Image (cartoon, rainbow, N blue to C red; front, side):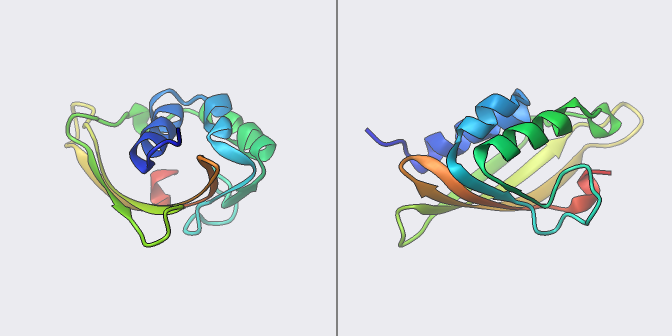
Length: 137
């Protein structure tokens, strides 16, 4: 039985944002899967484009070893998302609003982003992640 867009999206978020598990994240992609973050500037800690499961695994493992900006983490109870299916059953769009709690000295920060998923055989063949690149620095 094939997984739904919701199941694919939630397992992707759990592997990446929640557990920061590069192996699990890479396994969400097809062998030749592509991760793209078109708004990320050259030289950023997160590469703009990763091609192939092994490149995704290696690059994300290195990225997850870096300290999280300001030590912050998302507040999943305050955050939310909406999935939009398309006429193509292998394409869906995630509209995400993530809330990062303040550190005591600062207020919570809300960040909105959009991800476009293209699937093949129940795995991510291409993911375009459109988010504010200043989240990385």
